[in-house]
Length: 237
Ligand SMILES: [Zn+2]
Image (tube, rainbow, N blue to C red):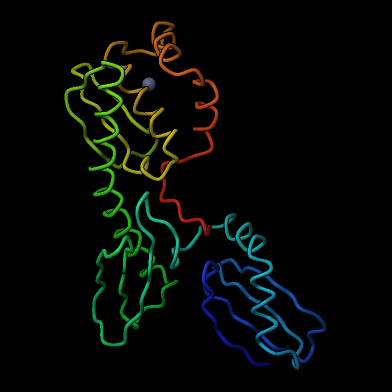
């Protein structure tokens, strides 16, 4: 048996195995997210790579049932894309942002897919989301506040486990930093929701009447919000 590792754009690391006993092309995703392609022994690796590319959506679906890994080219928030670069000369993790790309440099001593590297990557992505949310959520909240005449005291961006946002009796609004990853119309829905809480604290009929007077698809938006969870999204798009 022989095998080779490949790094495919949009898919990630793929390992192609050639075995004498393999009769046809096969694809699988292991528990630890390893994407395996099995080839009959005389088939060129190129055929295996084409097969992986053709089955991108199958791979995506099968990765999604397990915990996904962070890979190059995935989006980070609204502005950035991730680029993971391994370097022999590095001892520590480093990152920089340039031309809307979040570069993370990893020491070659750790595999990109190792738990250690993935935790570091997650931490850097989280900080990037936080910086982005600080600017963009504030801008958006101010805009909606102006449009609706609903005023708030202060905005805080926090990592919350379950909620997308909250508003206290003084009109201080807290927004989950993971909200910045959602589509804009859902971000706007959450911001509007919290702004309406500045005048109606509880979810009573007055609250929903006000919501409905400011947006004509509140029901649809609530339903759509249920598809999302406050986590870092790292789908392969
Ligand atoms: Zn609420």
